[in-house]
Length: 171
Image (cartoon, rainbow, N blue to C red):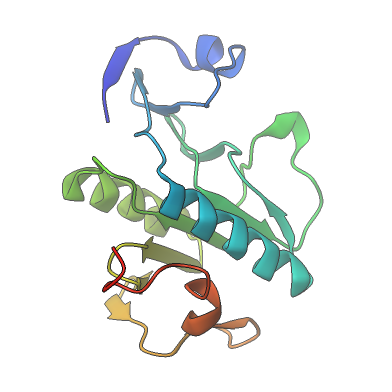
């Protein structure tokens, strides 16, 4: 992710970009470009979570610390809409989808922020590897057949997440 410039929280919150950017300790951070596989998986996960009764959005800011705002690829919650368009309470699920150019350290920092904020379900999806990893305080767990929430209320088979993607032999 490229760092654009330094700015205040107030300036960040009063400015919009397309696509949105994250804010980390005074730095405006651009997200990496999304490729077709990323977009396809993002759309499916959004629809799958919504069809399971969750309020689901993409590209919404989450204030994980006083000077940190993250923008997960997909976010799902059960509560009311956030005031001011920013989540200041932990959502039920955040999903990050690997983009070309993502650096492991940047993803690890995001996951740490989500864990510190108390988000109970953090899913990291790598479309190229057809892999979903669940991140928790106790470590990472690679899902084999299905990804589930920590309370077992939401379950999505991996075959559904990756159903429309070409097999690795076709790539």
